Image 1 (cartoon, each protein chain N blue to C red):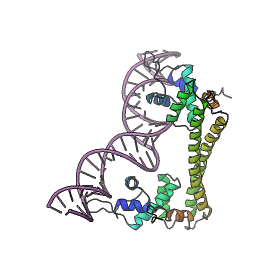
Image 2 (tube, chains in turn blue, orange, brown, red; image 1 turned 90 degrees about the vertical axis):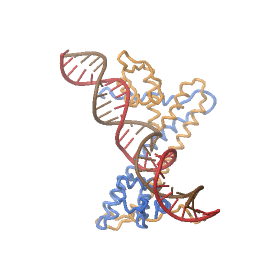
Image 3 (cartoon, chains in turn red, cyan, purple, brown; image 1 turned 90 degrees about the horizontal axis):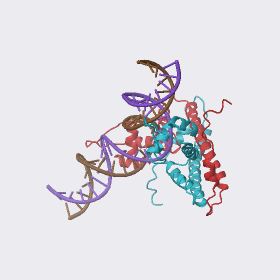
Image 4 (cartoon, each protein chain N blue to C red; image 1 turned 45 degrees about the horizontal axis):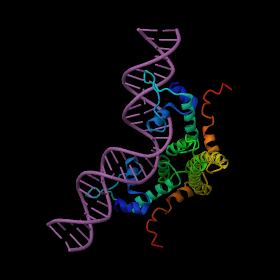
Length: 139
Length: 139
DNA sequence: GCTTGACCTTGCCACGATGGCAAGGTCGAT
DNA sequence: ATCGACCTTGCCATCGTGGCAAGGTCAAGC
């Protein structure tokens, strides 16, 4: 199977397959006489695993760990669960940050008439103090 | 005021101030005889505006628009509100995506014993089909 | 056989926002 | 004069992905 077929079957783009190989996430593997990369069903399975992990937002370095656990029949599920929990915590953190932004902006926008007049609490909110707190007077 | 003071007073790092200047987000402005950038209170005010917008997650290109609205006394608040609404929609979108990841992973993790045994629904979930749907049989 | 189009190869550049480092100039105080 | 804190420019790194370019390969059709 060439890289295009592997990409179609796994849902991982050919570009990314090459990239994952270049950073050592997947093994180089066989080449045809012309230098084309060759993939087996097993390889596609592995690529799907990576693709699924990416869909869940795991960064590649964590996927590297997940892969080693996946291929280690002696793993303990606790190790996997811990990795997952750490990632969930990170997702929660990012969700909290984005939600805080969303809420703050919503609050500002709620006070904005949204008509032809120039008065705008959104711009006023952005212009307000809030950045100079490097030396909070040792309080 | 040198760039370090401007950074302290605005909460925007000196590095970023230079960057914003290099991409034309802020105007080049005065230099001392030695070539040091000089900043006024007005500049600091502008930097704070940018910093606040960044804290709300606005990308720099949108901040460019916000700045032009801010400095345009003839603006209509509707324009500002529309920009804000678009950004809120983007934040919501990202929050939804992250939440979907979080929920999917949580579901997998909930079924994982997290003990010394190798059985792990998380890895099973990642290994499951789900990437090869490029040609959904024209269904 | 030759052409054509789809595929493959490598390699470099781009995004977005930020940090870091290096080599050199400047300023103020001792 | 010297030292430390500051400034300058410029390049590299992140992270994951896409795009483009220039070239090689393969299969199908004429």
